[in-house]
Amino acid sequence: MKNISAALLLVIPSVSGFVSPVAGNAKIAVYVPSAVSRFPKISQEKSNLFAMDDENDDEKPVNPYADPNYPDLEFVNYDDPEYSSGQEDDDLFGSTDKDTTEEQVEAMREERRRRNDEYQFETYHAECLKSGEQFKGEWTVYRTSTFLEGAEDKEGSRPRFKKEDYVRKVISQGKKMQIDAPPEGFEMRVDGERIIHEERLAEQRDFEEEEEWEEVVADSLIPADDSDVDLSMVGKRYWPDLMSSWDFRGPPGCMCVGNTYTISDAVPLEGESGNAESSSSGPFSELRNEIGIYYKRMRYRVKWDYRIMGDQNESKHPGLHLYSIIICRETRERWPRYLTETRSLDETISEKLFGLPGADGGLYDPPPVGTKEQASQYMTLNLDGGATILFPHKIDQDPHAHKGNGWVQTLDWSPGRLRYQADRKFFGGTDVRGLRSLELSEVQTEDAEQWKPNDDGQDMRQ
Image 1 (cartoon, rainbow, N blue to C red):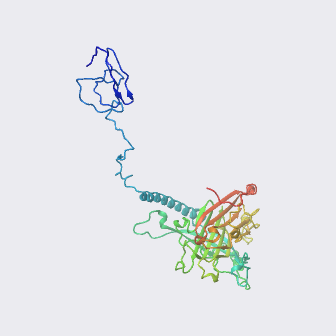
Image 2: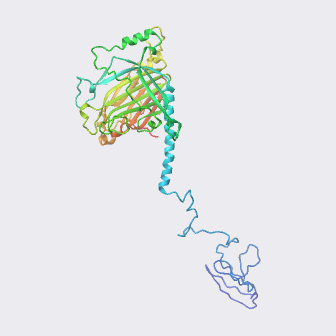
């Protein structure tokens, strides 16, 4: 039925409706996109028309996409509920559940923390301790009236300070040591290293001339009427015993940034931990913090010693009261000042460490100190050498005190062209040893007043 001599009307349904009728002496061709075709394909280029062919009755596969490569192409219906990607059993995706993914992510985070611990550990030893070099310095001790016999403070009042006339000449040093490796070895090199600190009173061998030693001996005589001198000040620990890289993680309270650092040590409240060993979790019976700023050959350190009162032993969360403050003015491999005429005086260093008291204009950037009630527990003290410190004279260990706010200790010192302010911000409650952040501000000394912040004390933003 290839030729039709009479008029013929043919109507064939299609997907979109009907094909228009065709009449006359012509071949009839119909494009059927979605039905089984019995028409042979007309030999025309770029044509998708099909014609009827009695000689080819075999059914051909449906070609819904009008693609000459069909059915070699694969068309995927992603909405099919039985659809499968074929990767369900793949080791990378199929066997990884939510818990496993979290473990892998946490392992990556821990690796980054370990690398940061290593960096902090190495930086503290190389920069803050100058790789084990000796620092020679003078220590000035301030005792609070809270713990002095015969001194009574009014309830809720700030303590008074007594500056000891006895100035201690002290040698300070920090060195690395190796510990024995376990059978499986160490995962990282720093795992087998520890830092040990040594602080001791100066001896005759620490002076180059006999006259200097004789003056030290004369100055170190404690007046007979001064019974408040605490001889245990030198050698008391302000750092973790056998300091490791993990101690820079945060809870132990150690960190360094720029040219400043902070370290801490604590004694748990007896009965809470069952022993008097150092711990990162309180409550504590003693808490000791230190902030240090180093500049060229000089180092300026402040040590705070907090203790509970004798009548607070039965309290579950006793408050920590300031016992003493120690100011350490040091230089590397030499004494910060010499009193004998046989040695040339370095007036520049002496002025920067022992000059006029107080930072110019007070703290450069006063940190936030919490509520009005909490702010009443803070004090500032101007120190010789152009330094000012801010600190709480009482630290509450009750987790609910002051809405759970933390605490801050600040050292502001101008050793030369630059002025530095270090803020040690730590947690409240029983986590008072834990460090929240160590922030360092530095500004040109002569421009400090011009660029002084006026935000009424805000935390730094990262």
